[in-house]
Image (cartoon, rainbow, N blue to C red):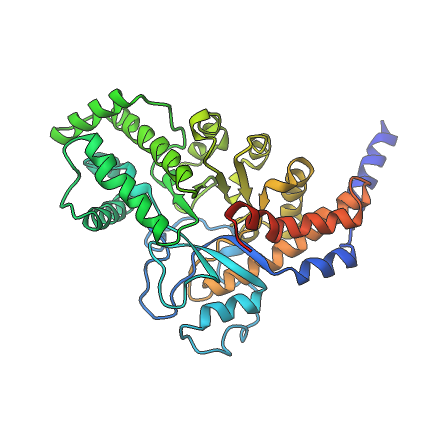
Length: 407
């Protein structure tokens, strides 16, 4: 028994002392990355379009250590050598080593535009066309979030030349939902985004159209139960996901812990999405689980067997230190290296940690973590060094380029 304990202790010590292979590190440093998920802000002051559900106004909560004041070690002059004009956002990407950034925004704008920035709009508002007063009463965070969603739905209705949701579900689909998705596609969207985990569970059941029609009709004329309203949301989610696939847009899902003291982490377990991923009607739709499903990173792994399901690492390098992140990346890479995407979750978190600084931190952490993961795989004889370098390019660039048809 003592011998076994000693062997395990030595193995753990060897892992802790593992240094990144210099050739792998050098290659990773050269890769111009595609950032699969970020929230860049326009260079002009006063921008609020970087999130449909901005988290700045939440009640106080315990933030992860890495995102607390004083923990971020960014060179103070890194992003001050360029004026904040329309050329500034692309210049920021150059400083970090990002070829293109997938921008989750309500709309693009001056400085945040193709080809350096690819658009992903938000569709959660389309899931909640009825009175959301009761859902919003759950806690202060959801009250603010449903107010945001109601405003966004009004924007989409106005763009459809409608003052309010139509009387029937059929008309709502034909006059609001489908035209909104088509308009986003024409606007250059490569994917659509759901932040639904901030509003409800990710368990989207397969609800037949007649059931959804009945709920919509009753909800237009009076109060309905939360359970019945969920049925309508579930139907709308699958309809939107199918339509996105028809239009050639991927579906991005917030699948992870989220900000706020009231966030329902249990409701973000990626296994809740398995019936969606198994739906044969949705096999034309590519799904990306954002933020690695944290803390359910292991539950993510078997879902990568689905032919149209991917995972990105965004937010993880802003919560995990490199060695912790390397363990997550290694498990995914040992299972499905062609399904793993690099992401930052760059966001204007605070005056100290803007979208620029958070993107830089996420990039530095990911480079080190990926180097550790690949070096470990080479050291253990799982892959060769050339194969490790190939994996690095896949994660940082090639997988996303193939998924979205980018060059």
